[in-house]
Length: 86
Image 1 (cartoon, rainbow, N blue to C red):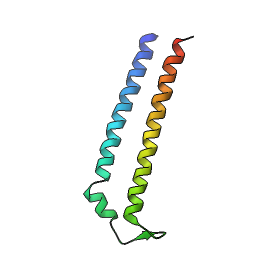
Image 2 (image 1 turned 30 degrees about the horizontal axis):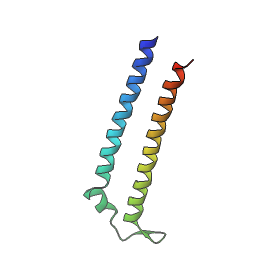
Image 3 (image 1 turned 180 degrees about the horizontal axis):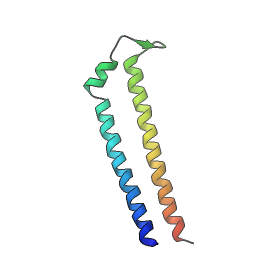
Image 4 (image 1 turned 30 degrees about the vertical axis):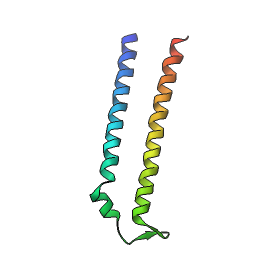
């Protein structure tokens, strides 16, 4: 049963690393020319230019993603330490 647990932990961490890379590349792509040009319009939302809303919204989403990743790592490491003591 122990090799099965090790395999599960390895695969879950591998998926987590892949997700970090995907979100990092997505963040780089979203902050480059084509997307910035799309949102660089004279349209305003509640008096705030659309480009600023896009940048601040992307910043908030990236913070949320980082929080979720660190939370999943923290709970995963808590599970690792908790199962070996009993």
